[in-house]
Length: 482
Image (cartoon, rainbow, N blue to C red; front, side):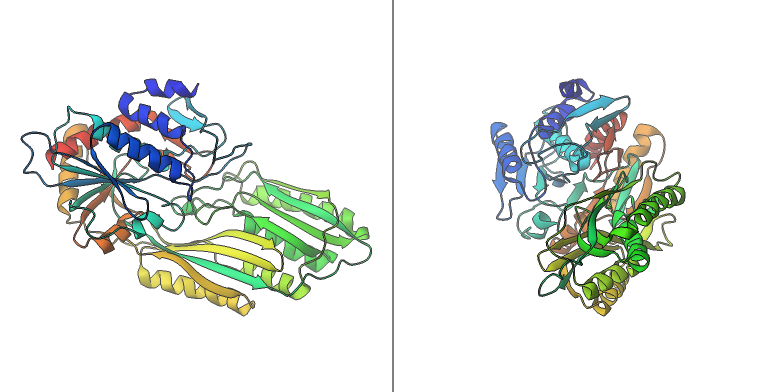
């Protein structure tokens, strides 16, 4: 039962996390969660404000005797990525979270531990009167997962503190001092009208399912399959060998999630159907072999379908297939100063057709601004050569590491004292809000940390129970030491 989570240790954190699972909060649907947070702050007689963008700021006074300490900002984002393998309305339905051994997971949906555990941790700090700390500012940002909307709307006069603890990392015992920046590429193929159906052709629905997906930043190095890349690999061969025509395509869901599924409606001469079935079966066997040990449940199927109203014009179809086939995807470069850390990557996130249009979205990431610009230029070139319109969408800068940070030194010493070992110091290949906050508040001393969260942005998302206890103890000790 979900409510059993409330009995986990530390109870205040898990109680608030359970409450958060009951409040729908997918990205771009923030009204209910911001109302909840406003009511939370006000009910505890804490100064609570909401800025023009929708971010919530709650202030807690210093513990008596700690008034001279520096003000610390605790920060997390309120939204979650909606991904599901079952019937689930993220605008209405609560998350069905449950205990599974040493983990808390959801019932085949994303859990929202990214970044709900961070939010719950901060809420517990705000309401615990036994803690010792200087003045605190709790910043809860909105719509982080798609465009960093909330943090991009921060005004430079909102925060008083100049030390920031970002609670959005996902590996306990690791302190993050840098992150990748990102840029969205919005790509459009347009045509005046669809092509007519070909007499004698039949329609087939092709489905690719069962992929793991995951976070397009922190999971990109795991070599998981991209549903769009596999689908278009198949389509290129099917078009070439069996006279296939593409009527519609729907691959991926979110710019920052590795696409798990793709569906296409195609037509082809009736006499080629049996050969197509064989190709689908061969591709499934090939994909499973190529991703053995990485993807265990790849399912590639074909079934007869109703005739579409029209087809994508052949020239557009061919240009699209070639561009997607040629599109750089996955890890592009690695960081030399932080071995094993991705520097630059590309995620071919979505390919979707509509009336007279096909839209492609790609998220390019890099902790180097110059590498990011080069990667975007490469992607731009591929799709521009294919005749598509390429526009740059949301962009955010990387957070450049400062290994001489005073707060880093304090937190390293605190962790060593608590656990008799040094925490790792790393750069994360994901878009933390720290990079944008650094631009708005130059000189802000920042660290990002968190519990063990695995497979964020996918239905396999889970948080390790014991790591939340350690996160709480470390946070409490850090606030007293600063």
